[in-house]
Length: 173
Image (cartoon, rainbow, N blue to C red):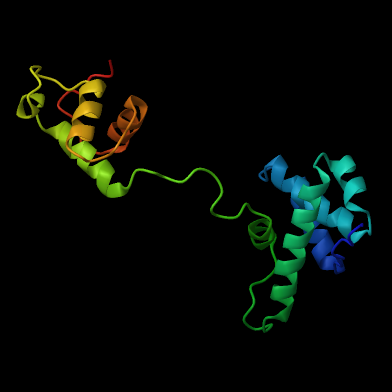
């Protein structure tokens, strides 16, 4: 069973704007592909043909076609005096990746702060007979203190790199 693609209709000024975006050097190529998908959809092409022409797969073309149609419809339905002007920034916002993609942070800000605070103390306070922290020692003490159930050396290193305060010469070895 084949599905019908969402129809796209563009006014002349909208088409001109989208074509202008595809020529801008400051716009990344992957965003230009999305705009080209919308432009091709407005000509009545099928998703499979658009995908072949611009280098996306059929499902991606359908996603950007639907996304454009939804935002464009909502934009048209809003009061003319309240809606933002259609410009490149608005179009690229409509065709941007949605939030929520990618891996979620498993270490909270509070836990990060505690690991960074731990690095400010001396290892001797925790029964470690050295004068300077190593990543391995910070991992071990973070787990023993119950700050985290588990943490890698790389995560501790990233936390220390991002904090404004530096540990008491935490070694990277």
